[in-house]
Length: 253
Image (cartoon, rainbow, N blue to C red; front, side, top):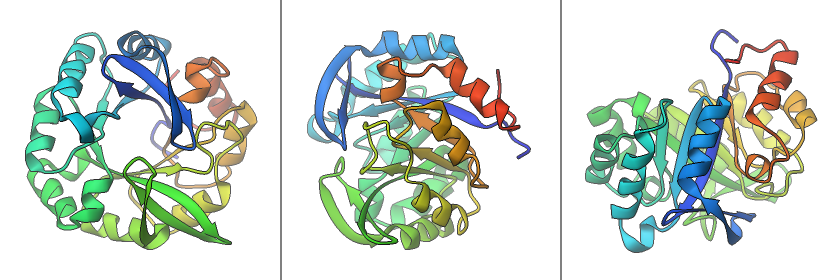
């Protein structure tokens, strides 16, 4: 792996608070979101994802204000997610300090939006987030609207489609594993890593250092996202990176 493996802190933001639940449900407030963001930057996170959980209900003004405020003190790539619906939303996010945007629901409802964003802003700015739920043996379905709505889309087929359509990066989030700290959905990770060539980042399930060892046995993964394990201090950015390095994988220390 020639590039540095990335450790990405993800914060779910509601107004000025950071919140977190389990399996995309039961969200609870954990504290001041900006303080969490600043801490993860200072601790050595390679990137930060700000997921605005209010966006689809109340518009983008709160998230953009928070984003601008964060970017004054945080000097790592920042991704904005949540409620982005069209090219104007993407433009506003990038103008407000985001380096990248992550999008899920809108591109399922309007598949042409992937190529439109890629052509206008460049594929390097476009992350497609896939929220996956296992429905049968070796079969996973794409969910949208914060994991509440089924789509009927097969995760593996959808991943291939978004790559072909111009996505620059793919973030794979397991709904089944979200917030329970029991390890990643390794079966899904193995399958999807074999069929796409764009950067693949894995989220949902990190709770112990040995979860990293097992994940890194799969090739073609370029990063992980973490929220619960960091928020509740089960793990730190520093010990996550040390564990990655123990696996002979290049990482920024």
